[in-house]
Each structure stands twice: as C-alpha cells, then as structure tokens.
Image (cartoon, rainbow, N blue to C red; front, side):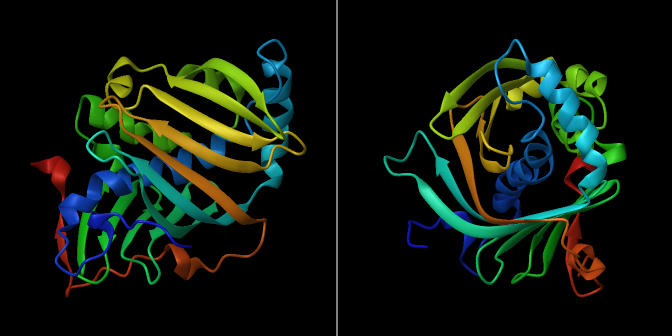
Length: 247
C-alpha cells in the first residue's frame, strides 16, 4: 500500500534502539488491543453484559492474525507516517508483530520474554517481562500480560471504560489504564470493532507526548493453525543482543 514510510523502519543503518519505542507500541497494539477489541461493545449501560458474553467466548479463541496498516501522527510532522505489516496471536500469550515487507522490524513474545528485532542488522533487544524495571516501563510492559482477558474482574483492575460511541458500522471504545504510572506513557487507548460480530477493525494509542499510533486491520483470520516456528526466536550467536531494562 502506498504511503510515506517511517524513517526509523527501513534503512540498513537504522539502529535497533530507534526502532524499540515503535515496536513496544506495536506490541501493545498487537497483544493488548487485539485482546481488548472484543471486550466491550454497546453502550456504557450494557458494557458489563457485553463484556460477560465476550469473556465466555474467549475459550473458543485460539489464534488470530491479520494484515495491518500502521499510521503514526507526530507533532513534529505535518503529514503522518505509514507502514504495512502483519500480526499473529496465539493463546495464551504468544504474538509476532512485523512491520515492513520483508520485515524490517519485529516484536516477538513467547511467555515472559519480549524481543524487539532488527532482522537486517541482526540486532535484538530482550525485555524479560517478569523482571521489568520499576516505574512506568514496568506498568507499560505489564499491559502485555493482559493477553486475552479471562474474567471481568481482571479487566476492571487494569482498565476504565471512558466512553463508547457508534461510528457507522463500528463501535469506538475509549479506555484508560488504571495504573497512574502506565498513564504517564499511555493515557488513552481506543479500540474500534465492527458492530456486527465485534470483529476487530482498528486500534489507536494516544501517548502522553501528544503523538498517536493507529493500526487498521484487514484480512483477519481466526482460529487457523499457526506453526510454532512463527513464534520461535531467530536469535543465535551471530546476533548482537542487549537488555535495556538492566541498564
């Protein structure tokens, strides 16, 4: 798809550190927002009932994948930056998020570890989620642990429903992390679902610096087989690996 490419998503000389904030944000969209997309629909008054029905259906969701167009709105730029990619999810907590074709940057999670990869440069950043540093980064990474929420109590513990609106054939659900330190990085999340069937259509993250990141999903496939190699790390002795949270 045509569009302006993000400068931190394409050149051979790109440093993985510059790509990391973007991929961490993509990780939130891939793991957290895919999960939340079906969590609430309808009006604020009947949100609890809809949430209960969605939670009951979660045992039937084993995998999800889709193409995406990512659009970044930055205060310093008059025009947004766009990139295309693909996301895969497998319950309970595995995902792979790619930007670029072929992939120029990858966010990969399996269990308690998140890897941010720059395949062309063979560089990786490792984030052990169970050992994340204290403060806002820990709370932001903890959003990934939500995965596909299994009960309403856990959902309410992590998020407040700010508002819900109907936009044509979709519902826009505006959410806020309950953690004060998480809100320092990510004060608002918007999830867009189809009114008919609650299929995920888009997500938007609004960051504290005023920037926004939107992901529009197409060609979604639910409960199709995804080979385990999709979530296998390619990192070996030839890669340069760093662990930013330990610095």
